[in-house]
Image 1 (cartoon, rainbow, N blue to C red):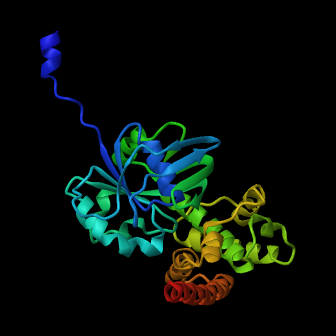
Image 2 (image 1 turned 90 degrees about the vertical axis):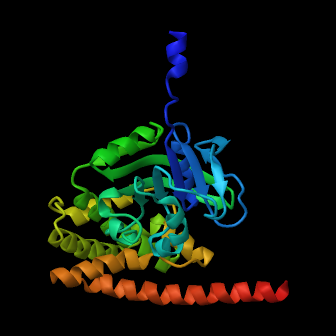
Length: 317
């Protein structure tokens, strides 16, 4: 028996590269680290990440790479950068994606596979949706208030990926990913944009002056989603609004945090995606168009201010 055991090859431990080490990337990397060899792909100094999950503070058990130099193909690439930053990770994907690599796209919006079609065919892309409440409060520290869940499109890759994730982070395999993704998109399009425009947290949903805008955005989004094949229940807009009312009042959306930090906003992949689908399906979405235009103007202003601050810091240095 001993001789037989010696001859058995060690079981391969899957390799995973997480590209985009913000709040979501850190949480997912931590959940994968017990069952896979994880590499955090992050720009700048290659310091390890720490995470506080409901009071449990610990270091993420993962290697850290500051550049793609010297890296090779892995079994899994998990993309958690914002949708608008996908093109910027091209050098990482060039190094990490091989003929057997599956790319897990944990991003907002729809059309996940199209964003990485230059590097991997659609059949090796696993689209996913994130339901995690986490915030990066320092460069190397993430606080996760609710592990929540990931939702991924049903298939062999989904089952294999789910098997790698710590059970504390639920992974739901979704048969109707069109409906799942449009549900998140419609809600995100309303919640992210209006919190960013008003510079307020989730409590803004209850403001009588703003609530009609939420209703209009949700109603138009539901109409577009239905035209795109999403199977939403009767009265979906009101159901979505009620769901928003149940969110923690002091929570900030990712777009609000980006606005406050002077980072580019993700509206082109939220309201912009709704508008693009509306144009193709012939569904009117005037409120979505109005809000999208306002966020676009805000985004340009915030970017100019951020660039001005960077220039001042360079001059001061």
